[in-house]
Each structure stands twice: as C-alpha cells, then as structure tokens.
Image (tube, rainbow, N blue to C red; front, side):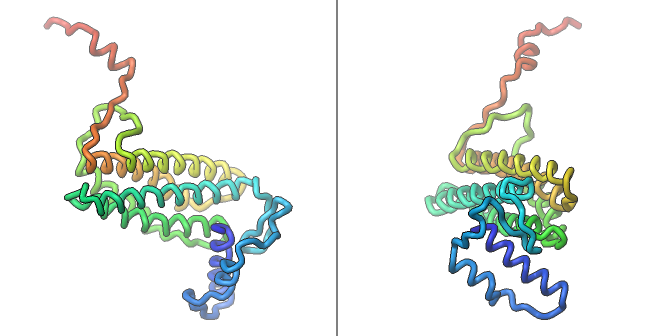
Length: 235
C-alpha cells in the first residue's frame, strides 16, 4: 500500500513538472482510485512498478531501500503512540514528549517524501532544508541532556526502546541506500538526511528516558575496567 500511494503521488508531481499543467494535490484521482482498491495483481510475478512506468524486481536494492524506509516510518508510528500515551498520562510535565511527537510526525512526512523520491529517481521531493531542521532540533534536544562519559546501552523506558529500534532500522536503511548508490546514483541530500536522522533518534531516545526518569546504563568496557583497576601513579 505504501508503494502504490507514493508512486501514484509522484506520478502526478512528475506530470506537473514535465508538462506544466496544474494539478490540485488535494484531488488526485489516480491516487484516490488506487487506495480504494488495495490489491492490483500486477505484482504477483515478483515485480513492481516505479513512478516512471518501469517494472523492477521486488528484491532489488531500490525496493529494499523503500521497504526499509517504510519499516522505519512504521516504527516511528509506535514511538508517536508512546509519546501520546505519556502526554495523556501526565508523565511529562515539561512537555518534551508532546514536542517529540509533533517532530516525529513531521519526520514521518519526510520519509514519505524520501520514499517517493526512491520511486521516482529523477524527481527531487525531499526538501534540503529539512536536514538543517534535523540538526537544529537535535542540538536543542542535546542541550537538555548531560554530556556522555561513555557509550550507553539501548534500553530503559518502553518509548526509548522503540526509539532505539527505529534508530537501528534507520541505520539499515542508510546501508541499503549506500549500496544502491553504488549501482544507481542516489541523491546526496537523501543520504545526508537518513544519516542525520539516526543521530536524531539516538538523542530522542535519551530524551524519552530522561522524561520517564530512567537512568542511562553506561557500557562497562574492558578498557574502563582496566583503567579503574590500574593504581594511581605517585608524583
């Protein structure tokens, strides 16, 4: 369903840019018709259509990338759900979970644009200013946190756990995009966005643990253990 909706949306944008006629995006007939009939049978042979009309194998790198982005978006929906629960239950007096919820929903829209750009490689959909927005909001969140002394273990509050899962899916999506870029050119802005997003989600998971009062667990590395056991040198 994700692929069909995105591909039809981009088809309409593509026709607008190529032929110059006006399309009212709130009344796109093709997209509406496709969404009213979920199955098409055209993919029963293991292929799917890109927005330009080309048929590609569903196990190709481009489709893997679209699937990873779709999976990431779905996991972010779970994080949004947890943020809504925190806000309703009164467990966040500072309003951080509500702000996170709105920001993540905004990111979900970006990921649909990113998926659309994968479906229509010759069309730029992702706004490059969104990378600046990611960096700005990341810095704002980071200012609320204590500096890290060491790597921390994924875990803590349920919302933070889901956010960390989203981060790892984001990293996988990035690896798939990098692999795709070796076969077919991928937008540098797309690669930059997905790379920055994984950093954003790491900081977001720390915020969620902070909101719910969960202490961060530092990695007990062998290096640190050795340093702690080493006797202090006499001056």
